[in-house]
Image (cartoon, rainbow, N blue to C red; front, side, top):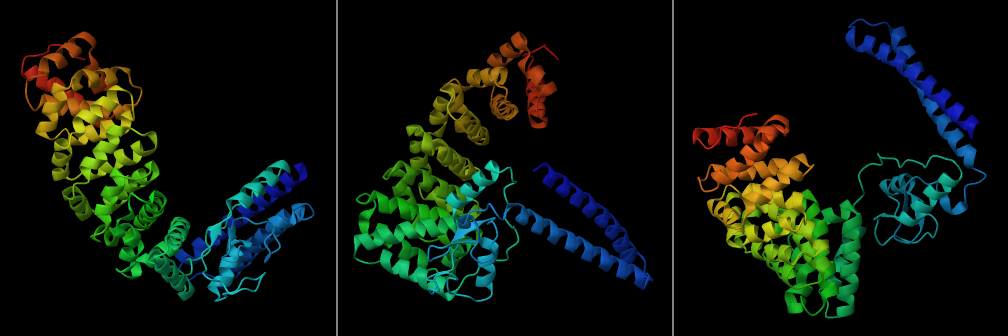
Amino acid sequence: MARTGVLEETDKEAAMEIKKQLGKLVKEIVEEEDYRVETADEAIRALSSLKNLQRSTKSLSFKLGVLDVPQEFRCPISGELMTDPVVLATGQTYDRPFIQRLLNEGSRTCPQTKQVLAHTILTPNNLVQEMISQWCKEHGIESPKPVQDTGEEVVTNADRNYLNALLNKTSSSSLADQKEAAKELRLLTKRSSSFRALFGESAEIIPQLLSPLSQGQVATHPDLQEDLITTLLNLSIHDNNKRLVAENPLVIPLLIDSLISGTIQTKSNAAATFFTLSAIDSSKIVIGTSGALKPLIDLLHEGHPLAMKDVATAIFRLCTDLENRGRAVNAGVVWVILNKIMDGVLVAELLAILAIISTNQKAIQEMCELGAVSCLIRIIRESDCERDKENCIVILYNICFSGRSKLKEIKDEEMANGTFSRLAQSGTSRAKRKAIGILERLNKTGSVTHSA
């Protein structure tokens, strides 16, 4: 294996020399209006040499392991060790670049079984990928790198027909058919961006997808609900689908129902869907006015570890809208967040929410009543996280400038420990500005004489 390393290093050095020469030649061609024809010929020869070296390197890498590579790790098309194994509709595994090339050329049959493909979606074969990586590791070979540029995924009429067949199943009277189709849709929308894009072709697809839930089966069949809500989450990740999903009148009420009743995975995925949909400003308003913030905050209060982060990120993004901050405060978000922070739960994410809603006067009042100032000061003193300190000082700054009721407590902390003076010197740029602002506020009101 040592000899292999020497050969690879020699090839790399040769490639670097050719690239340097090629760079000089190309620069001369581009910058000089009357460049020599010989220069262009030399550039072509250099490029050809680089190409041949690249081919020989790849060939060498293959030859080194050809005798030992298990048959199941080789692509049936190329015969080479697979770099990105994927499963075709027939269940056969191929290397993505090679099977994708056949699909791009119009082939619609499996090269091995000769079966006509029900669809052209390629599913990553993670098990084979892991086995190949392990085999390479055991034999001292670098794991093959997947080819990145394989072209756009193909969307065919077969894929559209397959989607329609699945949607027809979700609308059928057979519960077994509905569950089978929902599970398949969940998997396909997770794995294939081209399949997700298909949903944007018609506004009728979302209602058809959700028809089992709109028939009052939200609570009676939690597994079906989980699969369909997760499918919505997968769809909402696709940028072109966000508005289509958010503006469908069925979606937000069903997501709210799923925050309240469903498996914990359903609740978490419903919250995550609200997060992705609220990337569009108009959707933040629609979601906020729909009453979604209250069940999100209730779910945050429940405190299930699986759902907490998705819920917190959804609340944060919704509260970037000014009116939603007021709605969140009215729904009791301050009390819930402060209790979680005092218990040391999801502190960074919840401090970020508290900072963004601290521009709301009612939020400030509740923070002061619930003992937020001492909690925030303690975090500034004890935390090693600069972002947490920054959010704490932002909140304290807003408290300082909303009234005088907490100035004495803040002044006492500065006099005793110089907390704000230190932050004004060593915090993030935003934290420094806010700390300096607090010190100036205290000085103007004659509340402090301590300085850095």
